[in-house]
Image (cartoon, rainbow, N blue to C red; front, side):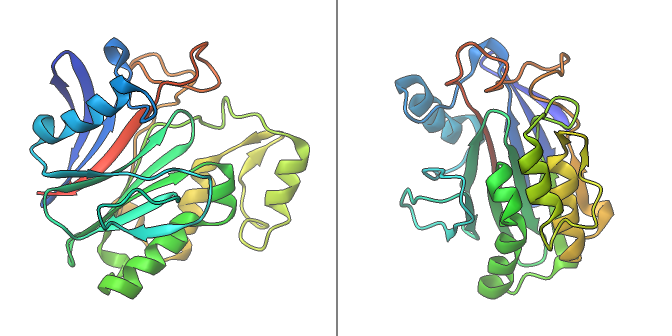
Length: 236
C-alpha cells in the first residue's frame, strides 16, 4: 500500500501486479459526487491521472444488482470487467468499497456495500457472477476492502441488528457489539464462505468517521454530506 500524491490530492494505491486498486481520500476537498460538475470533472480526470482509457461507474441503489461493464451507467452496486485500461469504481461516504482482482483470469470488480447490500450478500453474488462469466476460482481472488465506517462508530437500530442476527447467513457470526454493527466482519464472512484465502484479503484500516491520519468523506460526520470518495480498480 502506498500514498500517491496527484495535483495536491492523495490516493491510497495497492499494486496487485497486473492490476491497481485505488481509493481516493478527501484531501484538499477532492470530491467524486457524480451529480456535481466538480465530481464529474474529477471522474474524467482519473483517465489522465492513472493512465486508463475508460472509467465505469453505476447509479448506486443499495441493491444486490451486479453488472458486466458495457460502457453504460446502470442502476446497481457492483461492476465487473476484463477490459484492460478500463477502471471500474464505486462511490462511498461511509459504506464499504470492495475491489476484487482475479489474478489468473485477469478480471476486476468494484462493489458498493452499504448495510442493505451487505445483508443481501452483494460480495458473494459478485464472486458468483465472476465465476459464471469468467471462470474465476476463489483461490485466485485478491480482495481490497477500503475505508468505511467501522464498528467503533456505526451505531444502528436494535431492529437492524436483529435482522442480521436472524438471517441464515449471519446468525452464527460475531458481527455486532450491542448496536454497533461491523460491516467488515459481515463482508469477510461472505469472502470466507466463498473460499477466498485470508492472506489475499487486504483491509485498509481506516474509519471514515473517526480516523484522523487521512482525511476522508463521511456522510455521518460531514455537514456537507454530498461529497463522495471513489474507489476503483483496473487491469494495466
